[in-house]
Length: 417
View 1 (tube, rainbow, N blue to C red):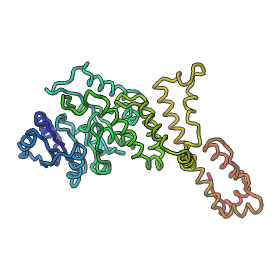
View 2: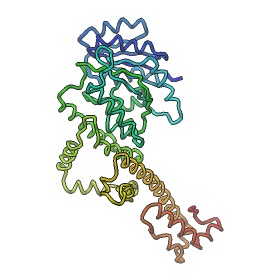
View 3: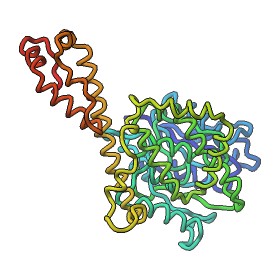
View 4: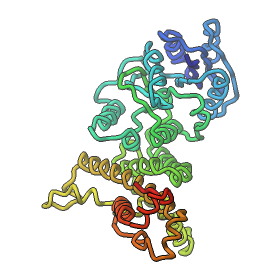
């Protein structure tokens, strides 16, 4: 059974710490380690924590370094002997069965690296927020987005950080070590969760197992500018951070495309228009030659997207009457996008098979001999629009080639079936 560590980054929450600590201690599946690092609190948080050392709570006190650095130190410390880590902010509360219900998800076939659950928002006095309170309304809206029948986890995360908080992260220690929290003020959890979603590494347990506390000392304030700017920076960082993975992994690329399209419907303070302005400024700083070279560098052999028209699925979903872009509702667009992804995956596989078949023909000494006598010319034709059509034509031509049939009978010809 994997060892589980619970960790708290404590900062000036002496009032709320007892409820947070006791919610870990009363778990029906107790953690194997329980570490709290106090990040230079100026109230009596350290004295509150010390009262629980007799219950097995480990305490480290450090000068103030910021939430992201404290989380990373917590993880590095417990990862030495624990495979799983559950994060809790010092003002939030776990349901007693949280660990017992989350941990089995790590043992399932195809298990993800991160588990999140449903949550509710509470006020300073532990009572649930009123339904008409703005943050509570936002949470209901965020989870309503996830109820769409065709939405993916990464599209949902793009539209709303439905997990809300770092307290909603239970994860494999090695994944946390490979993806440390970044020095954001507001979005260290959102960047981490977006990355996990883009890699399809989030498993969701749709059950309320966390209380997220809303109070006047929360980081998010009433002035939107700092949050909006950090949200824009976070998405620029996603492009920077995922550049190599996007080049190498078609599945990650497809999810990234979906994610960025879905940000157009964000309810998490992402402004698509200002993001386009940032991209325009980045482009303005480059020369015409470098921009031309950037586009020319797209490799047609590695990017199957270059072999098909991107809006084919939208046109195929058209009802034949109203304008195509207006005729498809939100659900329809996601269904069209899913169909496009299925077609793209089929094309990617066909492109791989086509490249393998062509390489087999090029490497065939029997076919090289045949070309000296004018045989196999039909195998050079690049007939067909899509990779699947090209592959089908090549296989058909190979099946009709008398020279290849002779070679197969002699055990010398390539087999393309």
